[in-house]
Image 1 (cartoon, rainbow, N blue to C red):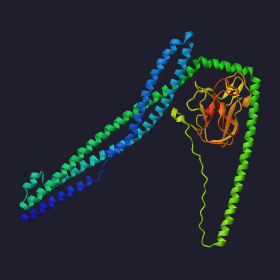
Image 2 (cartoon, one colour):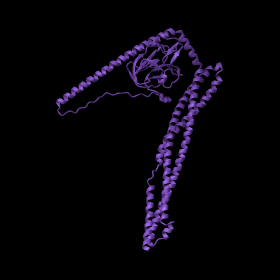
Image 3 (tube, rainbow, N blue to C red):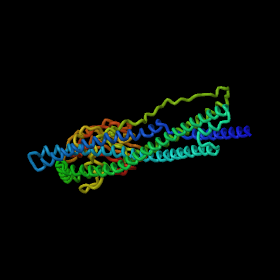
Image 4 (cartoon, rainbow, N blue to C red):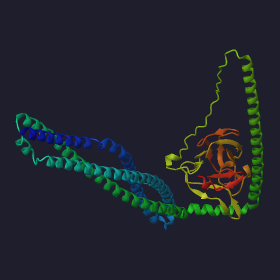
Length: 482
């Protein structure tokens, strides 16, 4: 009878050990989220926060500068003796507002990026937290099952197990079993506590990210509204600029006085452009025909060569054909990136650093203006850059009348020194009123390459660049492209 009891107890002890082992195995298969992984996921968010913080500081500085200039403008606007000082302050304020707008655009882009990163991080955190919670719940269930196994075995405590030993050998075996079960319990409890800590940490990070997300969304809307206000302020400053008002009046008077001559020059220029367009189309058609002809000749040559090789068939059929031609289609830096300008099409802004449009496309004083006039203080001598890669198809570089004038000097059909680039697919760009063009007809240029410098040749009342975009010979609105 004692032997039977002894055997039964051993079986129960063995059952406890098996359950404990199964529990340990079950607990060891749970996934672990390392600190390294979490750090890698949040690095992009940290970088964006630094950039956004830097932009906020710069915006604050510019706001203070604007406030100081506003006071100076208000204190001098009604004093005739301080008109020059007032205009200088207005021009400085215009540049400050432009810089603020560009900084805001950069900050808005960074905010939008951070919002997207935070939304992605939140989605991932929610999955991690859910998995961590499941991991904890599974661990608790495993622990309960082990306790239940002990209860079923008839032992309510480790002491009972030891006291119930039948002999010294049985006690030693149970002591070892108790030791292992205790170690397992400690490991399991420590693991659960650690999981609880990770769960709470991830939950806190999730709530922090959600708070940052809402803050950034609010900041984004505020900055967009401020961006709109700054653009309106810029327009108001230009409207207040007496120099601009005077220039408008002079331009209108000059146009009225030379209306017939100007219209005739424009009509003649348009006729020449349309003729040039047709010539270019014929050239392209001929080039295409020549290309196909050469391809056909090359195909026949290769077929003849293959036929001869097959006839000779002397075992030396291997040959190599190296083409040494290289293509330099890489694009030069446009320099617009230095001013936080972002291209919105295949074209980039043609005068980096100078972004005010004094005249746009449309009817003006009874005539249709086919391009945009780019003007900002100090633009004279600024680099004119190719808006896109292409080939220079026309250059006029003979006008010596490089100064503001009340009438057309007749050079270049009113455009003075100018050039036209063919970008392919029917697109042309025109750059007018340059001091000089540094490119030649037939020259290949890359996006951002310097074409010349800003001046006031041809029919031009002051230094500026006249820029046109044409598609299949028809003038487009460049504002839709740059």
